Amino acid sequence: MKTPRSEASVPVPPTESGEPTRPARNELRTQNQTLADPLQGPRVAPGSYPSPEEIRAICAMQDLVARNHAVTQSYSDLSIAMGQLLGMENANWSTFATWASKQAGVSVRGEDLPKRFTDLLKRFDAITRPLTKVDDLLRKLGVPVLPLGDLGSAGNDALQDVSNAISEGNKKVFEEVGQELSRFVTTFQGATQYDAAKVAQYLSEFPADKPVLEEAFGHYTQAMFETDANTKAELILMANTKVGLHEQRRLQPQIEQALDAPVKATFHGILRQTIEANINALLFPANLAGKAALKSGVVDAVLNPVVDSMASAFRRFSTEHMMKLAVPGSALSLGNDVPPPGMETTLFPPHLRTIETPELRTLLRAFDKSPDSLTGSGAEDWSRLDQRMNYIIDLFRTRQSDPALFDPPFGRRGTYSVTPPAPRVA
Image (tube, rainbow, N blue to C red; front, side):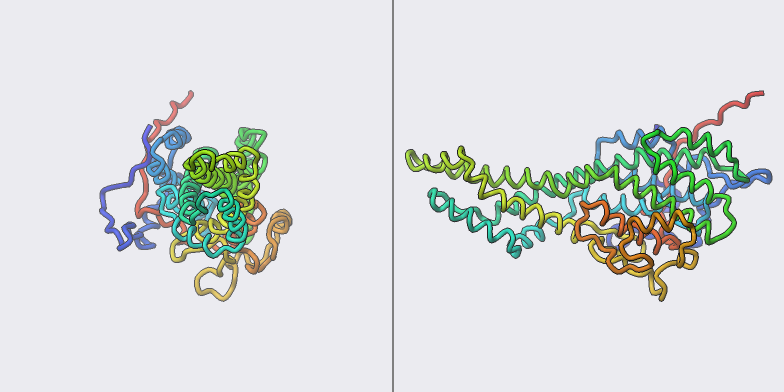
């Protein structure tokens, strides 16, 4: 079983940032040719996208940085394979997942901003006010007050916890949705018309606990053969949104872990250890009052408001500074409203300016706080599912027709093993 490797026949010069340059748009389209058969619909080149077995092998990789790179490359290749069946005029969910996975790699590689978090704590009144009560108690106990450097140290440890949680979430979604993307391509490539029996058999193989994912891929099967451009775009947007909803629900434990629970545990542990070490350093009997305060819970009582405020600050910091999405041509901050695409005067692409499909209208109303507008789409707290979906819906709708999203994230396509075709039964 092989993980994807980039094609090496044509070297791609790196940019100043170290990233390979993207091929010209016409070159990308040449790479994405399908195999034609007079009696069949579009077929995807063998070895151009990962099989379910290869996806599982990637998820088993222990090197988190290498695994993230392989996941990102695989999403891109699956995106193009899906595009060859659905049409490259609409981005599919894997197209967006490519860039989200690449952005996750920034955290996995530890490239986040611990110093900025420490600087934020110094200016955050909700922390400095309860911290004065901690300092007052420590002075009474005869031990040094807590330096802000200890808070910064706790922040660094918390960022590592975030990195690990993001890596786990990246793998979790890829292992689940990636295999379904691969199965979709394998099942429907070459099809020339909608086959209700084949679609029913395909959808019956989804686990019973994934109804929203099953619905999403059902919409993709409809979109394959839809000839009306508006209806097709709406079907793909509905599918993308439902995969996104399934994904975000599944990621909730990792997101909460990244943005809340480990922060409290890490901050409380480090600050308490510092205080305890300072108390133990006092000579007897000067240390008796401090030990009594630790045992009675007085120290924890004054620390808890500080820890809670630090956790709140960390969630804000993570949303503002870490929750970013770099896509071709722009860098989006998930804490701000989704910006209009490019220099266009309209918010949404032509086939999505108005939504006619009743089911899609209902779906959008459930999560979009400002229908047909981008105002209020920014997420103040990325740990909340409703705020994430509010942002994601507008992101998907505004960017669905952007061809640059199909650009390879590392400048070239991956290659995979080719499974020999099963023998024909006479």
